[in-house]
Image (cartoon, rainbow, N blue to C red; front, side, top):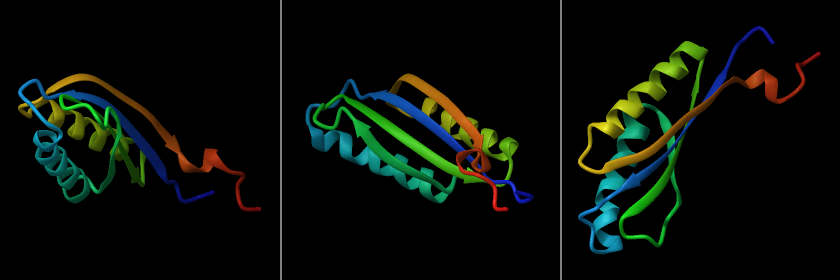
Length: 107
């Protein structure tokens, strides 16, 4: 495979200590989703703690043409998360992998 493609994954646990309902969690998660999609061209999903008022686990996945670009965009998203009003309980930035490793090359 001569053309490279990379996938980057970020998983974060967020804490919203002031929330009193699921509705309170909706606005900051919608804003985060919009930033991930528009600014960083990444996919976003809430994947855990969906019924919790104060917790959310979010998954961000992006594609890039180089490992360096994927890592930089994940680092930018991580910095963005830590600059918000909610607390970031944990972030796992992982799997900046070449897509070619996911299946055999075209021969």
